[in-house]
Image (cartoon, rainbow, N blue to C red; front, top):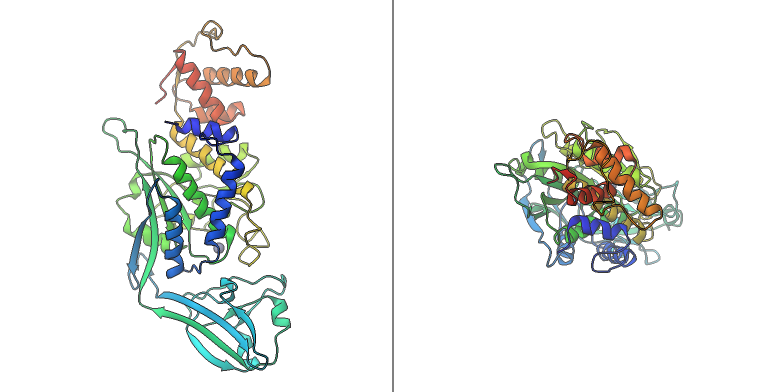
Length: 456
Ligand code: ZN
């Protein structure tokens, strides 16, 4: 059986242990984004369930998604679960010409999320206040919702609005808005390596929001990546349990938190995953405290991959729920260019061309590297601390020359130099300016030659 270290090293070398290339892994994830893209997701409703169905199918054989249906009206801390919205179709027709102006069968963004049901014929003047465009991006349809203020509306491109006829207009929002349920999904991969006597296995929380309709980066990228990560982790031994929450943004995360008070003390590390398939380097947003294990682990991986680390702020995605004072969980956020900083954000231009197989794969490898740190970091002790031990006589000095060999030697020397039983391998990697995997490999080699102990 492959280990996580073996999986990480294989991915770093360009393929899965079974030989699947990174390119076909990327294509597979992108195809899944494409499958999910047209589903009419919202805070609640059939699009959310269909999304969980498809993600569940791609997990078949590895894990199952447990689906939770919580009745509307349920309290969750300061929130109340709002009515369920079931959209069948919404369209707008110019009756003078018969032209269909917009239709949600063409694009799910054409209706304001949570629009109240309506069937009416309106004059142009009465219709206009219900239309939303982006004048600064005249070819993009904006993403708009109105979850808590009851209204209806259509979203269209500025060019469509500029070409709008005189009407009157037939408007139809064929939807139900009323009592029902809020749906979220949860995956639990249990730990497989027994914890030390008297200890409980810790959990790693991975969270991705699933309430956005046809927007690929925000957040089909997060959903597909976390699903692929679960498939990979299901095949390797694990010290931590991995718990995935796929819930509507904000209220869904608060709802999950309100129903899992017993789980929270076991969460050792966590990540919100979003916006990982578009352009730009990786951006890690620290936890509120900024000094958690996940901050060091993800910070190292992201910096080594040319990315950027930012401090916490109480705005963004569901990290602000997990980090709220009452929970204070060690949950950071991994994205590429964050929300609001790319022009395609919350528009129809966040489409299947905006996310690429290569960016998805790069993010997946980064995530596996992070998990490698979380699972395999340790604080070993040098058993031959009186001078530099002879690596050659122990058969661990690379006999083939070249730069790779000297990197391996340097990784061993750095590890021996700092293995005082107190310094972590991650700290050694940071000092040595090497990837964690290089130090982890060096430590395993040294441990095999009885030069190091204290690795788990
Ligand atoms: Zn968003």
